[in-house]
Length: 196
Image 1 (tube, rainbow, N blue to C red):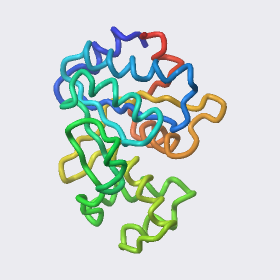
Image 2 (image 1 turned 60 degrees about the horizontal axis):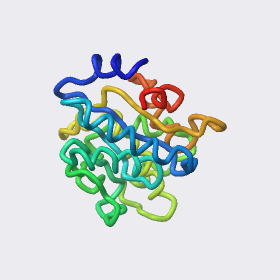
Image 3 (image 1 turned 180 degrees about the vertical axis):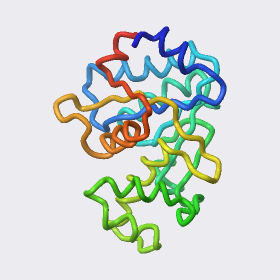
């Protein structure tokens, strides 16, 4: 996929594109992530970009988008105070503000991550401890893809920075898998580096 093809297919009102990835970013790629955020925000007109506010690639992508237009960056957080001193964008949603009892599909698809299966129900039930809080991150990742019944739109495309030696692992892998399970196309740096 070329940048022109991406823009032609996804730059329309209502389009939501994920900018996601690993916390550990190779030094030689850090500037590229910022530059992609800059390019996306400056060379498209309608896309709303979405991030999870994690350190690493989320932060670097978000920095680029926000430098151009912070109103086009939406952050989905696992809790209200998550990285509050390092938060970009002007649209913020927290799991604390979402009634998860009404989000059956979010919970079901969050449980596809077998590592956190038993913790998802504990978190939703309000049993917050050091293990169940980890499920909040997986639920947040699922919401980034599917949106919510309460008004967060589903995403239309996903742009990722992945660990190519251990692809689709951890929370990034969960988000990529939820995209693919819901027929949402994704790319990683093997494609988008050629856009720069």
